Amino acid sequence: MSLPIKEQIVIVSGAGRGLGSAIAAAFAREGAKVAINYRASCAQAEALATQLGDRARAFQADMRSSADTERLVEEVTAHFGAPTTIVHNALADFSFNGDARSKLDALSWAEMAAQLETALRGALNLIQAARPAMARAGFGRVITIGTNLFQNPVVPYHDYTAAKAALLSLTRTAAAELGPLGITVNMISGGLLRTTDASSATPEAVFDIIAANTPLRRVTTPEEAADAVLFFASPWARAVTGQNLIVDGGLVFG
Image (cartoon, rainbow, N blue to C red; front, side):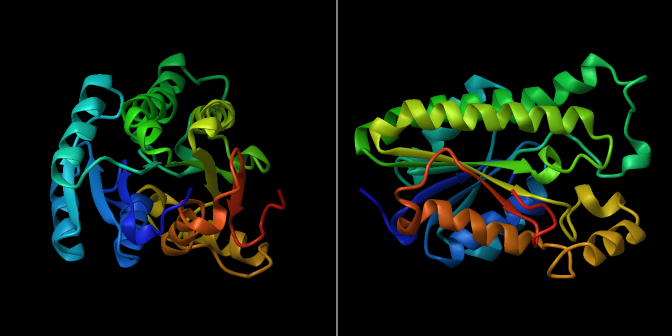
């Protein structure tokens, strides 16, 4: 079974800004009903919902809380109907500036745990909250957001990369378990994006270096990464699950 994107009801976590807002806008552009989840970026999420029109609405919830996530799914279901598609994009507070990140000799477990709480626990909460409705429908699309730093760990983002690697493992084990229910689970892994709030701290020279070393000779935009998310939600990907698609202009060959 597959549904065209225009018939899907999509929850995008962490959609108030950055890549999440681009993903929400991409789904809305294709006619889906879009729940713009935010934790603290209320003004940005509400502004995006207004921009996208009646088929989009902002919903507050902290993905780290199972109660919040269950409430989110209940509120989305009451407003739009049961979600068919979830995109776990939420990111713990993070700045993509290698010079400002803790090296191994100073890295604390608290820093690691903060990333795991949002990346891994948040994904688990959202999958568990959305799974019953997807199982009843015999259709579901789960898309997680990873990183090309798995293959190319050129900056000391130890906490971020480890959390995303754990999320990739959950993506694959979830794909194996949920496949018989008609639910696919896949990951999109971008590189540094030009530009989001999180990457705004990246020195301009770093963007230039990445562009020079990328086959397409430019840095991927949030909108380009968002379009790849649409592929996994679309009927074109109905036989694809458990995959990690790298979307970085060819910087890393996966």
